[in-house]
Length: 263
Ligand SMILES: [Zn+2]
Image 1 (cartoon, protein in one colour):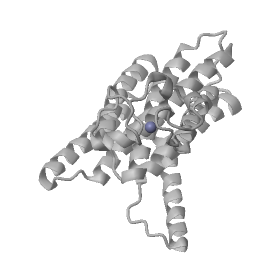
Image 2: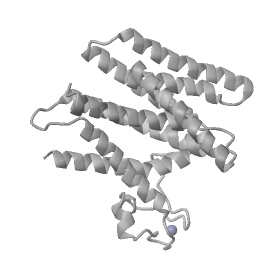
Image 3: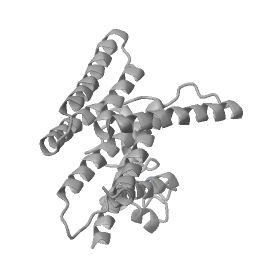
């Protein structure tokens, strides 16, 4: 029975993986991500629902466009599988027990998956363009409010720390708007601090410090490798590193909690 739930979650992940490529491409171009149909980049033919079904459509069509026969990049297929695996790994980390309908685990899972979605998109866009998308922070802000209300009404937690984090998140988004007005340019580092505050809400102080420290090490190692290989990489996509590391941290901490410490 659990297998059935895990299968659904895996399929959800593959749909996200399929949506991810489209969103990372369209969001920076300010294109619609929900209503405009996907099309083949080669022949521009509109894709139907069957063409968009993750993994299976790639296998059935043997990696080619149904309409013009152009090869579809393997990257899309791999991202769909990766999306499924990440969702699945996170679901397994909760050790769901079907006999007890553990609503608190299900709600936490849903909130964090929505959080992961925003981090994946922030990471993907930052990796491609070295840019933090404001609309994703706004999504994060709304999600955070819902999460804080849920956590504070159901658990004994320190309400004040959440309030501080969410205010910080908002303040830095506002500072960016003021600077944007003055310099006609979004400030990467100001938006990055806003992203840090967002992470503090979902992974709390210790989680954030661990994420931050590992990210610094990862960026440092990457800089050294670039130096050795003599590849010039001017701007570092910091948000990419920190988002991916935060996702890995959140998954691992669950395994630690439910499988090793058994809390
Ligand atoms: Zn085509």
